[in-house]
Image 1 (tube, one colour):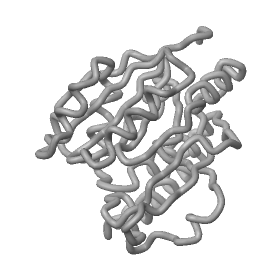
Image 2 (cartoon, rainbow, N blue to C red):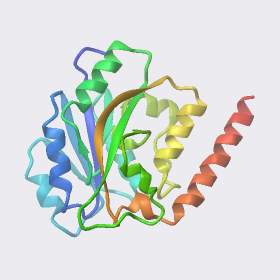
Image 3 (cartoon, rainbow, N blue to C red):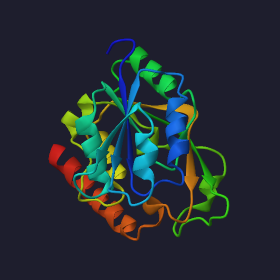
Amino acid sequence: MNNNPLVSVIIAVKNGEKYLTTAIESVLKQTYKNYEIIVIDGNSTDNTAQIVQSSPQIRYFLQNSKGIAQAYNQGIDESKGELIAFISCDDMWTPEKLQTQVEYMINHPEIEYTVAKVKFFLEEGHSSPPGFRIELLEGDHVGKIMETLVVKKSLFAKIGNLNPEFTVAEDVDWFSRCQDAKISMAVISQILLHKRVHDTNLSLNDKQNTHNLLKILRQSIKRKQQTN
């Protein structure tokens, strides 16, 4: 990896006009400047397309399939960067996020992906989603989630893309596959993501989540049995 790798920043969005501008601005304010922004729009019916297309730095695509995993995969396929990062349309990066993680990966070439700490905050006027652990609103936490991830694109060829079988917890499955394959990774001990919590968070209140997590656990156990 060279000392100034291109980072492809993928935003998957559907009807995200309320928060999308703030998310995009948090990317545009990055201290690391060698990036491209790819937006995969799940055929929004609000002003998402107009917001995105008003920014010349963004490569905009309508999603050609359904589901968040497929949106991420389409973004990965369209990406030109050696590194890939993701941000949700309702979250915000700190300005030094990419700089911190990219520099770490340049200095530690054996590392294939990094994640970082996240600070959750409750959106004003909203209640927390059912099943959300309210204690997460206190302090900061290691976020093994897509929105903190900076990853070498080559790892997707090795581990596979996101599994569209999972409508939620697709990131849990991907990180589980990395762990089972003993992929070298690192946790950056800084808060690099501010994650908005609101009662319309699809990933936080989907009833399918528990079922998917159990399925992911079973698949992980099976992988480990096959390698032993």
